Image (cartoon, rainbow over all chains, first blue to last red; front, side, top):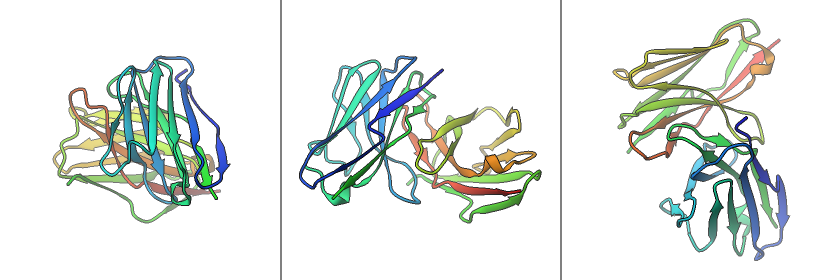
Length: 114
Length: 113
């Protein structure tokens, strides 16, 4: 149980295009989902907290107009990287939180912007 | 500001030995602490949670201790196996409804056969 999927697992896009990443909790519901970014040999960096039915809360320094988050249901959150640039290339990971002290992570999405 | 430090160097041990990883923190009073395993190119996998009022937790070959006075957690893997090779992350959680975690950089563990 407690499986979280992400799609796609990897994506390569041209600079200036937008990329959407989906995060789904497959066998449980989560009112809260988190989006992280991880650069090589660095720890997880929280980008935003996504609550179902409300606007996402972004961490300091994360542009909300560039990283659009939609949490339309208790099992789905999406992250759209708009007008992607090479510096946005990273490993994006989501987590779903069914209870206060629990987070289940997706397998991650490797984004490469050319 | 809050800070978490894990073993800065990678840990190399022989199969069958006990691996001990440390997590030290400052400027924070967590309500709980979690340990995760992360393999290359994959998301973290939850291993153990220990709360501020608990001293020790065990799960199969894993043991976690939590000393809120020293502001330190130790993570032990007994009878280590090559399959235990991965990066291990510690994360601190706060009280109340805030579900955000504060993450350490992780310690890379290599278990040699």
